Image 1 (cartoon, rainbow, N blue to C red):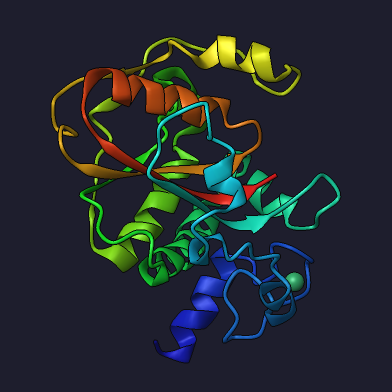
Image 2 (cartoon, rainbow, N blue to C red; image 1 turned 90 degrees about the vertical axis):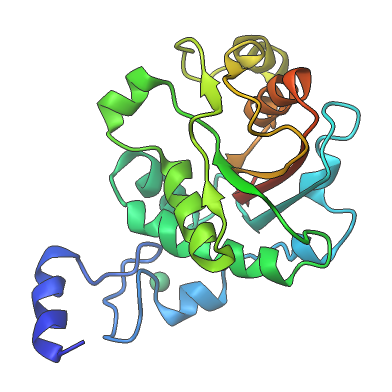
Amino acid sequence: MLPIFNDIISLFYPNYCYVCGTPLTKIEKLFCTDCLFNLPLTNNHLYIENATTELFYGRANINYGTSLFTYNKASKYKNLLYELKYDDKTEIGFELGRFLGIAIKESPYIKYVDYIVPVPLHPKKMRIRGYNQSTWIAKGIADILKVKIDEKTLIRNTHTKTQTKKNRIERWENVKSVFDIKSELFEGKHILLVDDVITTGATIEACINAINNSCNTKITIATLAIA
Ligand SMILES: [Zn+2]
């Protein structure tokens, strides 16, 4: 790209690291080299048994699971997830989704997927927020894997209240019947179910159960972060 266009883009997109706020150089994108280098990667995709997969043992039937990085309340990387979810910074989802896509491509445990399926937002939330953060992660993954995204088969039924102040049982009660399957598209297929963060896993568990109740589908989970 011509330097002039880079400068014009700079006017619209702030060239500061989304993690630490340091000004970025022209070759850095969204994060400074330091923050990118120190991203607490799980490398889950290289292990048959890992924290993402194990979280669903005895709860839901999955083929495999992987998450790109770990985070906790004190982590400076938490900001990335917040900005992606609430502050229109969809490019964070796309870029980190590409990293996740590269990890998936490298994984010996994820050979081939038929569809990439973002965990759906309720239409009401979608109207308010204007986008589904998981769709942007899915777009990044799709850019690497060259696999179609499907958002018409797994849908969300009812509006659920915010998850933040609930314990694990309450969260599960809250989401267990909110997802539904609208067609037979996933029958006999392998899907990659995508979300931004796993905390208790209740939302993903509810999606898996909705899918497994209606069709014979192999499900692999991919998330940006795991708490
Ligand atoms: Zn930084």
